Length: 511
Image 1 (tube, rainbow, N blue to C red):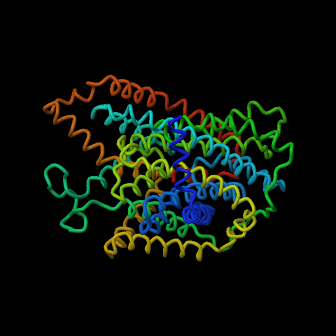
Image 2: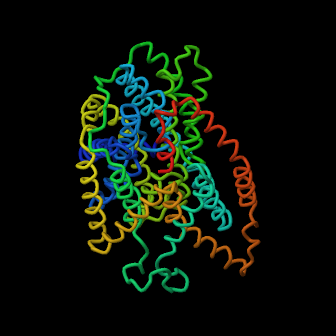
Image 3: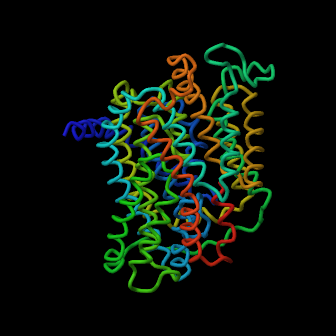
């Protein structure tokens, strides 16, 4: 009951005319960027992150809520109309959604994706409001060994789930941890990996890293494979659902929410697995036999799972300071940009900000449905912009955002370096998320490790001194041993796709 009252207080703070305006701007900007081919919500937030740095924290995070859900909706639009998922979690949406669009039912596919996102996001946000404080209360009592083990769990599970190779995932994680070491050693004050460059002493700005890897890397990758003709976009009318569509969609929405939220709330590697599980479940339960030809259940379930997982990721992010998705990692960097330390104390030290953020998620989710359903034809026309002009604009705003962070031209050079790194990672199939998580969690892991070793006098067995830490390491071992089963599950889901239509799916999953 107390949590419900706090959520109502957050709604009261968020429901001011100015904050509603920020939420609406966030929804429209997030959708605008997210609907562009190959751009997911993480890249949308990374690209627009510098825009919010001149705002108060409350207003900024209300805009983030709109950016977040707007970017999610934009990703489903490209999946359905262009057969181009912006991230691996949208592959299942594209599987049936694009076939619906080719059959003249693109409007219905967009509508069930939008309503499913609203249902799953609303339920997920309410669950976050009730689970996060309880988890934060428990997390405050955790010792350094358990907290270190939790971060190892988040990194290992995320790294082994993404991409086609665990080795490539760990290579990307190693790069991220190395980048996270750049700067002064927090204990000794000695510079590490700075190569005598004074601008590197204060550690690398995560905004520059994220924008370079996501936005600039993606733009360079597309430029390297550029087709100058505009993408073929399937025409779409006003999204609507018939009574039969509603009847076929509401159960998949709820089942998808049930699949997605637990995977988001636990350090389990994001929305990829629950969307696969949702698609397989709906295919198994379907009695119409139209899967593979545009079944609306194949859009409703995975899209709800995707958004429920996206809402669930706020549980570890707010209660533990652990980002388990690329979007969470970018939002966590925004918290740090305001001088706010993520972790168990966040729920008590910045309670007003946290509850206003949760309330703004509900508002952003509602505005997404109200504003974007009527604008679906407009977003479809946006996809006709020629790629050279489109990505030239992305490069301009990426450079402007990187420069605006510290007003230092050196950051432009760093942006280019990380953009080239992002391009090479895509070229050689290295997933991006482990690198970003390594940059953010690496310094936190180092702090907790040194804290544990200092207390124990340098005895590494202290890392196994707490029962929770032992349980986590056992779970890590079981997860690594069970990875072949996960790979077979993914292969089974992908077998239902036409290989000719999804020839780029592996490349998409790497990013």
